[in-house]
Amino acid sequence: MGRNKKIRGAGDAIGKVTQAIGIEECEGCSKRKDILNLVTMFPFKKVTKMTNEDKEIFKAFLERENQKTITLDEAKTILDLYANSFHKRIEPCNTCGGVYASIIKQLTKLYNYEN
Image (cartoon, rainbow, N blue to C red; front, side, top):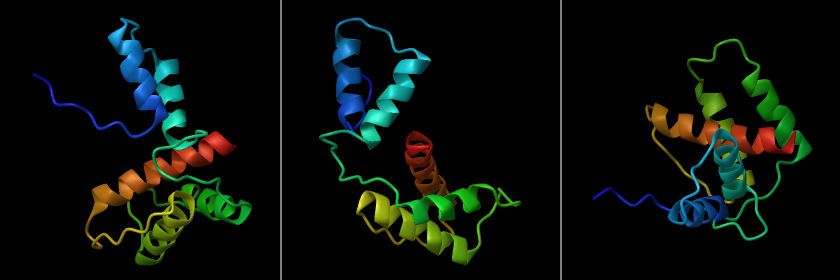
């Protein structure tokens, strides 16, 4: 028996229902699910829109030359942007690259949705 995936928001809840009635998920469905998980009228996590200032900061981060690593200052900025957008502050250790990659992925989804 497979492991139950945690439902993160309305997108996952709708996905479970459509899967149960036999509708297969396409690429468009997957994108809508991710967007609904982030920004819905009734999100499971409290989410707000990025401020214009936060969008500019994140845009500059995405456009930087070295995409493989982040500096300590960039890591602090990313954590601040995440806390502002998702109302949740996390303090990972400085060597937790996977945590930062996940945070950047969530911020990117929110940024792309709003632009």
